[in-house]
Length: 85
Image (tube, rainbow, N blue to C red; front, side, top):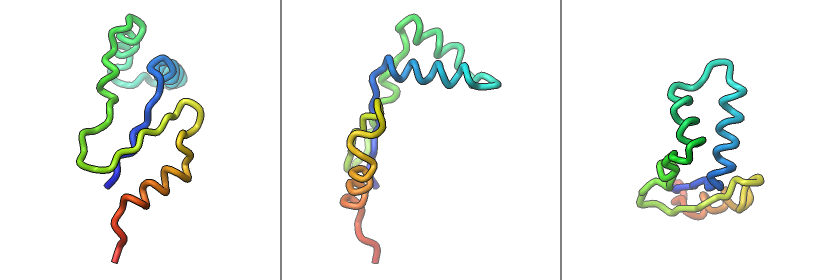
């Protein structure tokens, strides 16, 4: 098991969330409350922190694609996964 954790600047995460919600035909349950908190600056971004797992962890910046690259992410996963017998 590995933990690949996506990271993103909170302002960009907010922009993406709002854009997705505006594009939906039906709002996601609880979206209005989340949007209100984001707009007021009171949304708790720590809920999106990395999981506390006893596993190798890789942080991936998703601001513009993937950093490290998708190939590097796959290599990390393979390098940290026991070989199958």
